[in-house]
Image (cartoon, rainbow, N blue to C red; front, side, top):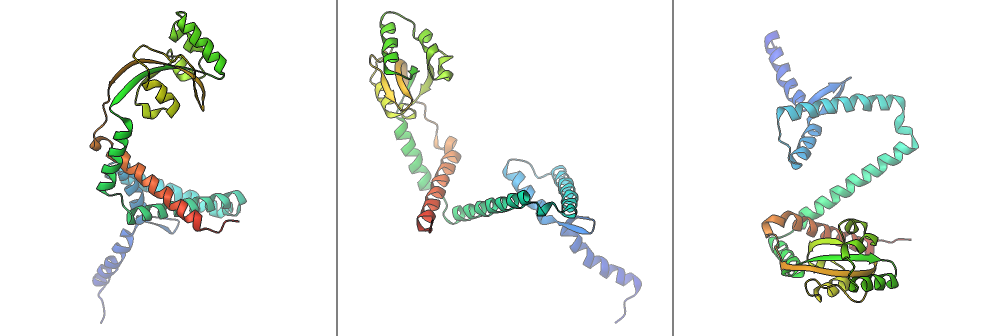
Length: 257
């Protein structure tokens, strides 16, 4: 069979178009596959960006620019640099680990029952009350006792709070804002919930941070967020727990010398 020139042109175009469609550009004879662009589009969409012609044009330009630089790096022998080799290996390891984690979560998904159970656990732990607390944190017990003596003598809490080690709250008179007792370490929360409104601790409260003088300003009914409001956070937290358990299990099986 022989092809007329017009027919031959049609055949060549028919075979060339699919090949061109697989690439977004060719730089100095080297093709940039469309799969690279699609991966970046997918990542952008995961971050909330819209898949638009403008976005794709930007990605194309970026990939072309990267390819030009990459080719120049290869010409100059940058890949032979010891630091570059190490960085490439570390990056490769990170990508592989991230891929392993994604695959593990895909095979071991968080269920609705898991989410509900974790939400209920967190809600129960938070309790049904919030406390508006103030505190003064010092290094030594004697310093805390001296502060308590001054408070009993009529000194103002917010003035004494200026000497607190907790510089964040010190600037606000010792104010820790509204919070659930569960957000504090246990010795602190135990002392806090034992106070009446307006009272301060008459003995120093020792924690891993030092010695506290605690004052309770007020108590109110807790406003715990709904499951829908925090669902994504719950899922991410459970995924992190699952991945940590997976890593620990692998560590136990590994022969480490």
